[in-house]
Length: 352
Picture 1 (cartoon, rainbow, N blue to C red):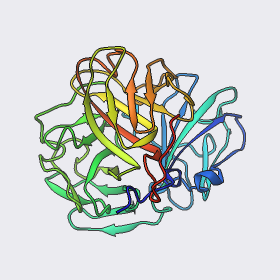
Picture 2 (cartoon, rainbow, N blue to C red):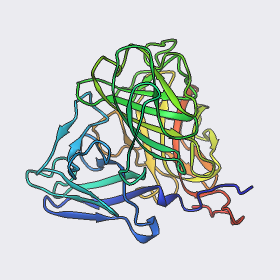
Picture 3 (cartoon, helix red, strand yellow):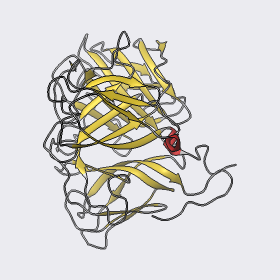
C-alpha cells in the first residue's frame, strides 16, 4: 500500500502571497499548485492590524463571492461587494478596491491567502439528521457544510466518508463565537477560534459528548445550534502524508518539542489548549527557511509576530520556550503538507 494517495498537496491546499493595490487585483494559483480553484479562502493582512477574512464557494449565491466572515471576531456574515472580494475563480480569485480594499486589497499592504479545495462549489443535500448542504472532497478530507440549526440534540452529515478530526463551526447570521471540535479534546468539550481561552471541558452543550463518525457530527442545544440560526462548518478528516490533527506537550525549553507529522508542513496552526493563548499560524511561503519566526494569530487582528519553529521534512520542532507554543503545557495543532514524507512511488521529500 502506498504511503500516501496525495503526492501533490498543493492541488488541495495552497498559500499565495500578494500585495494590495486598491484596484482590480486578479490572483492566480500557479500551475505548480494545480491551478487550484479555492473553495475556502482565508485572507490576512501581514503588516497591519486588520481582521482575518474568510470566503467560500458554498456561502455565495448567484455567482457572487463577496460574503465574508472574520475568524478573530464574533461578527455575523457581511457583504463586501464593491470593496474587497469580486470573485472566486477557477484558478484563484479576484479582488477590487472600490473603497479601501475591504481589508484584503489595500494599497501599500501585504497579504497572505490560505486556500483549500473542496469540490469546486458543487454541493449535495444530505438529510440524515438536520438537512445540510454539503460540498465535500473525500480525497483531501475537507468539506463545507451549511445548515439551519434545530436548537435541540441532533446530527449533521459532513460528507467526508471518514471521521473528521477537526471541525470549525459558526452561526453566520448572528454575532457569535467560532466553536471548534478537535479530536484531542473530544466531544465533551470545546474551544473557540476567535478567543484565547482554554478548552471548556467537561462541557457537552456544543458537541453533545458524542465524537463524530464517518457520516455525522453531533450537536447539542448550545453554541452555534440555536434554533433557526444559519450555520457554516468546515470539517477535516486526517489524510496520511497530507494533513495531521493532534496534540503535544511543550517542554519550556529553547531546544523545544518535536512533533512528527509524516510530511513537510506547508501550514501549521497551534493553540495552547490548557491555558489562555492565541491560535498561532506559520506557513512555508512567508517563512521560506528555518527558523520560521513570522506567524500570524487567528484570534487577533495583529500583523506578523515573532515566535520560532522549524518546519522539517517530517514534522515541526519549536525553537523557543514561548508560552503560546512551547511551555510545559498541552497544545493542539492542525497541519497541512507541502510534500509527503514519502511519495506513492517511494520518493522521499527533501529538507527545507
